Image (cartoon, rainbow, N blue to C red; front, side):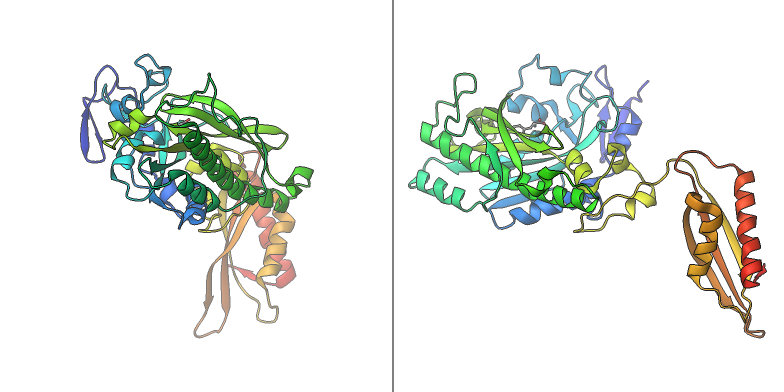
Length: 427
Ligand code: PHE
């Protein structure tokens, strides 16, 4: 069923009994939507990075999606029998190589090489999953992490300064854990003091509240622009912290955002297990936090995109709607095929025919079936001085596939009306 080798990013992977990644999924790895400045995922990445510039982070955006089981699981302390390792959940190239299931797979190498106190990693990640409006086997995450050294002179003072440097928000936090950042079920690591845990988790929470706030304030603006009048849109954003579990952090949490009447899970995080830092070759004095946030659902809210599959569309009606640095509202287009017909005529010299006149005639006959009208060609005969124009009309329905017969009828009505009203000569 699978070829003997898979060629990906210039490397050959020998397939074996673990191989389960189909060609369609492999082809998605070429897209790198987060690197496209004019794609919603890229625009969202830019928005976040822009707001974190100058705060001590390096941004990594170029990691290729193939990683080893060591990077994705072992180094992070996943137990051997963790369900995430299963072939049911993960795409394997072979026993040792897989498509990363999360950006945490790169924490290890970033801890090794990063020269700033913190870093962000944005990348495409892959999980075998059902496909529906909000699930797709490929999606995007942004990882963040930040470290300190216990050897810092007056570390607590340093942490307090770093916390004070995070831009403040008006966010409302329902936070039963702020004063008790750890407990028996969500324990602190013994190599950290109570105060270190308290300060670092405060830094983590403030950082994520700042991130979530800047993104959801934009989402509120676009909801208002799209006509939503719900009350919560005029109030400060509400979030809450929920205890969580990840093999490579302790204590761990998830931040949830109050959105459209429900709590939206949006980001897992915690204080990095010392073993992960030691595995990355760092000395014993390091301590810090990490988080991972999903970008696709947030981008759907920001841009009013109703279906996650649209992100992967190659249809220019999708692509051309988004521009670097701009949060615009998606205008739906049809999934049914359209029909293109040209109308070409000599203008009657006595009867000026403005583009808008033509648009009106086309709309009068085609109604909602008109997807677009574009001037294709304009020409003036050098001898006679006669002017000709050619418009391309794109007919398309939001609900069904159009028949040739009905388009022919509409199109000939358009031509007839042009002749009657503007005395043009159809070519
Ligand atoms: N990688 C986790 C996920 O995909 C999120 C996470 C990142 C949690 C970093 C803790 C620390 O759900």
